[in-house]
Image (tube, rainbow, N blue to C red; front, side, top):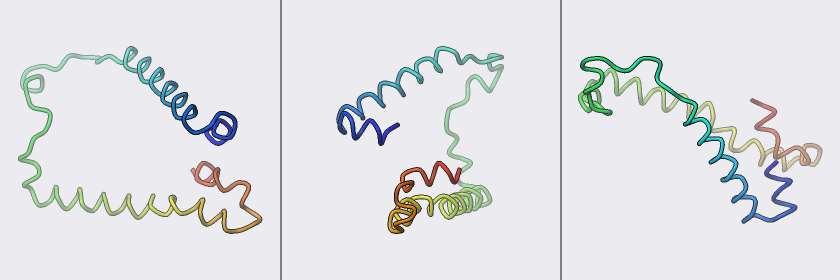
Length: 102
């Protein structure tokens, strides 16, 4: 969709229409979401971020390991369209390679 709109109406209008579409869908999703049960007791009064968990070495090791794992897993996806556009036989579908892979 993005590639077609970009060719037809230009970059500026494509970004505007895409942002409008995402904004409308986000507004609809926010209106439809509700909590099934209100929080009780301490859960309703606690802060959003607990900085005490960042002082635990096991948690820090888990977070850093997860970051490196997902960076290694999804990082090569950024170079896949570039690699496929370099090959003449796969150049027409270079923009769609990430969608095909997923």
